[in-house]
Image (cartoon, one colour):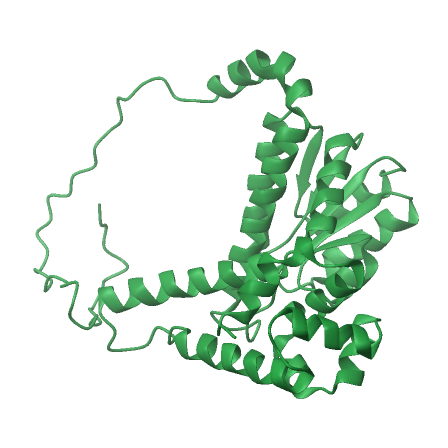
Length: 318
């Protein structure tokens, strides 16, 4: 069996039977748990029979569930060895660039394995047909929310983005059946966003959460576009969660653009003109020049460790 077993399962998902797809989803969602559990536990988690699990394993070249777990464990070991180290003191610019890029690639690979295409399709349908759309987010997730809202407006969708806790509650209180709330949270535990989700649900609005699975926000939502949570929410790994959220939103927007192609066409000229009016037509901008002479700073080399420099924050720098 090839070591990239998870990639093979993901690639063959559409060719599997309904029961086998349940097993595939369970394995892809929690591969490490699968390695450590019994066939009965996996069957219960996937809501299938044990013989179905055996057939699933044989489809991927294993003699049985124990053999399948060995191959899965080898895949997990290979992936864990290929994950980049954290950025640390002594790293060069080259090291930092490689680590961030490699981490992003690993994140995208994980997302491609775990994305639920059925939920994705239902989300595109909901967003394409909703009467009114509100996007709720806070903190650093707000940037993703505003970007998503701006792009939906360009597709002719009545959409508003709210990040203030009071406005969030008021806006969601006005939602009704036929409206949609998109709740964005890299952690899935934002209290204000969770409160907005509960209010929208009470009023009969549809709710799509873009957050990690099995979190308070996902539990209260109708649909969840699962974006895995990496590590501690207080650490740098939270950046990876936000990148996964952003990628998932781009997938949804691309789907909506195709789904609403006929509806967008008559509005294209109007939307384009409205967008162009917000652009500055003059390239004349003042250039700020400092006459002060500063102490020369040692030039940073791409392949040498990044060193700390002294910096006077009270001085003006242009």
